[in-house]
Image (cartoon, rainbow, N blue to C red; front, side):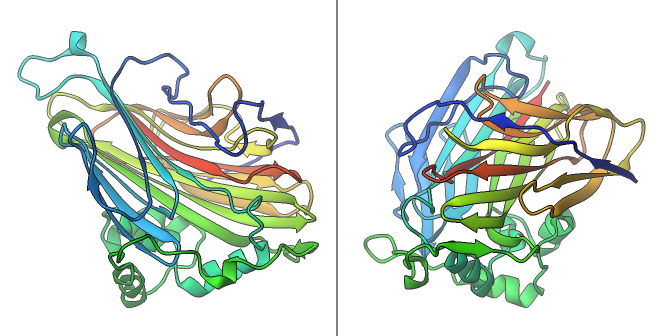
Length: 368
């Protein structure tokens, strides 16, 4: 086991757009430009429909939450378990010059993300948000199940993230409780509408604010899959001054006969005015063999440590900063594999008064 603790530093998210409408910047995890074969963006409003390019968006919603599957025209799928009003984005690229004789498809990449709406500037009570998440029975396990994983696979993959693991019966009850909408999409429950209190401090124990999962299946002969989740903890909230910890993980595989996975990542993006005040990984951690890597960050406002560990296999785990404006931070695995590999990252975001807490969760996978 390796235990890594970070040192104090701050990266401020530069202004990239109006806070009312945060914009996603799609690019490869390495920062290199990509030629996109297909880019699709759809609003998760609870209404199923066929999109202009022939892709099919299927949605179910209930009490402010939505489960969505976006089936692209090329046969790949992107699924999400997210707040109602989120946006799903899929960017699929390919490189015909690298085609291998006999293979189905070309080397390429897939980037799938979900942009979650603001909760803070709309006046939602942070204490009510924490309480509503706790009472809903939702967890990163149920989120993962709603993106297509079995209960057993969800627990095996994301049970190490620190969220409470429900029994199979309770998890299935939560998942089955997301019913098809009747007419317009459901509204937020009344618990979300109270005016924000002047002070909300978590007493030294960060409380889960929300969680979100996204999944991609596609690539060569549909042999590429990437699951990714993020858990947000509300560490501190005083007069609109918030500190939010993030635990993020992706688990991906490319099991094709001709192509293997060479990299995959998970990253979380915040928008103008927010700052990453602590983060890990902060450097490349080379792995000669599979071992447990534990990463830790400290909230500078509360002194609370958030740590998280999982198995990382060769070759390496490195930090990834997405976009030139340090829009997002996460972790990227690099190597060569036809089995499941993990990537993780942890970080603390300072969300100051007057700025949105809207965020996006991304998974990216490359095969070649």
